[in-house]
Length: 190
Figure: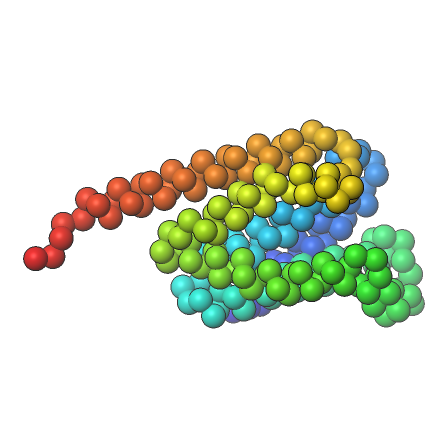
């Protein structure tokens, strides 16, 4: 059942991301939010947090990412985007394998399971590595886009992503401190 939920949830995420990015009427911010990579890594982290076993967390991370990619490409090639259904079967492979998309697919297949595992490690051991990478991803994506020449306007969206990254870091830091405090307060077996 968690595998089905991961695929369906991922599909919905990918479809919503693509839909948001294509809505010109919403303003430039919508396309910029849709172009963000960090949410695509946060998604498998959150999915991995739901799992008690490492292998299952990795599988769920992979499936939620694959579902998101499929949702994105299917929506791109659907009547929602004014693509006739007769072109659907040729459109999906064309879109999936052009431009940067093969790179995004490969990255998702690599990092989806990794971030799923990091989510699991957070759940079972309060490992700080996953939250640090999630917060770092949010905080540093705008800088990486500047270096790559891919930072699109409006900049308020990127600033909001950085602020969100700091908020995430503070929340996780607080949770780690509380977890350590609770462990320190436990009576020792003697």
